[in-house]
Image 1 (cartoon, rainbow, N blue to C red):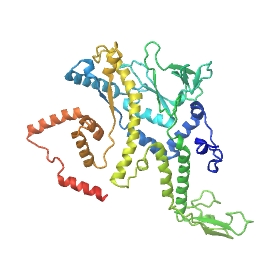
Image 2: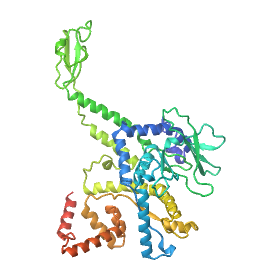
Image 3: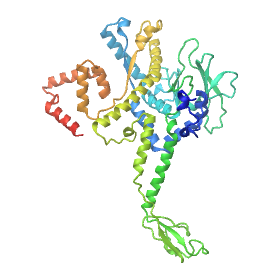
Image 4: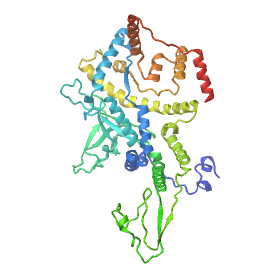
Length: 494
């Protein structure tokens, strides 16, 4: 007798489920054993194997990171026992000092990117390869105030060494008997490199034994418990994307051929090799005297006994767009990117387009919060500790109590805003949320424009003083009731 799932998804007798080839294993077997192929195929799709794959990863990178997640200190002034004026002055000092480090390429171990560009690179690498590693060495440099550096490492560099010696090492990640990650094994060269350099491994502990300091950061989106390595975001859709790329290339070639004067040569004299007897004086442009080539309006003299037959590939294919759209909707669902945003094509109404963007931004905000917590904040805390140790930032008790340390290093990370389809509607909605105490001016400023409310207030005060001194005023003001009514009528028409 069948009961529970044995009569449904786990049935081995239902005709609809017969022939389903399935197999499963632990996270290590399902993921690590297949990672090498998944990474290379994912990168191949990004590097030209599929334009849509490239666009999907860049769309996610641009919306989540954009120009970079910016620091907004949020120190706990009440716990630290400082007044509001002192807290504001401390915040400005922190922002000034952090900008000195983060806006310079000195923060990069390779000295190529600033901190915000490192965010873009780290996130894109994590999407493409499944995970990305960031070492945090201290490297003194001339004319550099801070010694903290960020060294990004591609996922392949962490792999199993030649000799494991009974250690629990899988995918280059070493765990103890409790399942805690204690170390990572880095290869001296990229495993896919053709370099003749001898490959060796360096064991890097996740945390310092005495200091407890984080020696590296592992950017990975966990999908299963006990998972050690990340999976490329394109992994579930590699096959449809590759097949779609092949289909697109085939349709493109068929359309090109259809646009030419296309003929096939039919010979009535099989005993005569194709091409013999052709008047070669008229084949000026052909390097091969016996070749037949398609061209725009090309006319070729045929040999005796040969005739031309027209070929019509029937392109462009009218069903091409509908089929591609159906596949991309499924791909977008897997990547959490709506079809409209995936192909940058908005043809629906305002409400439908806004719903698509809102759905996408649920995913983008989640990933932004994850990157801020796993990459930006840990690096910021390491930098803050160095700044305090060098006397650049006054923070009494920072090294004495973890609660005090936490109170000083609390921060928010703001990225670019989603933008607005209808700025007037979005602005009015923000005003209503503020008036109803549902939101704050600071949050609405960050989400609508990506700006800083406090800086805006200081700048507006300065501008007002300049306007008053010059006797000028700003024309315009709040939208009139007629403008609001017209906006509502436009929405109803859409």
